[in-house]
Length: 110
Length: 136
Image 1 (spheres, rainbow over the protein chains, first blue to last red):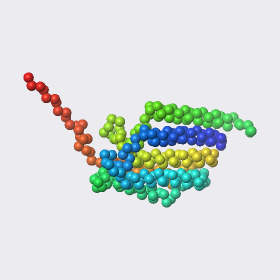
Image 2: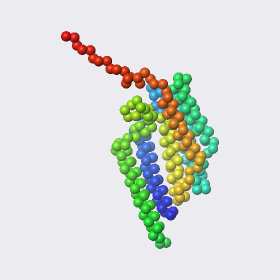
Image 3: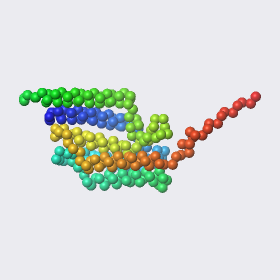
Image 4: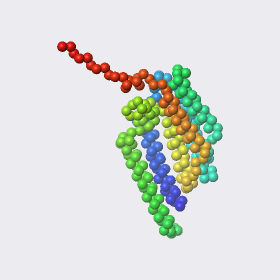
């Protein structure tokens, strides 16, 4: 049965890798629209600081968890838990992003 | 090499067939993406009912975050499953991370949907003035 699991997992791994590579290449060559991601109002000239913080936080947390999980390995037949100290960090950056977005849409923040 | 029993052979054949079907479907989708039959241009764009394409033309940070976390968690799951040779479980903390990302996307979308409509949005209901008839 181990061989069957490996075969199916390997197939799905190939699919996920191919899709990931496709999306990554499309992102890097500009085929996927990324304009205005760091602005609430796309016609504005400056970036919103809460969006920049959320973007940096997302990338840092993703990279940290990826290497942390690879290093720790499987525990009791499950993936390593997401580090507890990162949950408030991600929650906080997202909350700041939403607060900033609401403030700018409501005209509270210019 | 130990001989396989009939049920084991059937299970192996089914697993190979399922793998081939999954790989074929994936290859079809990836080929369609590369030949632009499936366009990923608006993958990260916020949706809008005001445009023919249904996209506002502005990328969404929430969608980007959901994309990053989905690929990271899927990649980790597969690497660790291949390492152990069995399908592993996803812990609650990781599901919470996906929940935070999805919740941010939904709340952000709700905020964008409740912003006051601009005067330009009322243009569709404005009657177009008839051209003046030439004199004589």
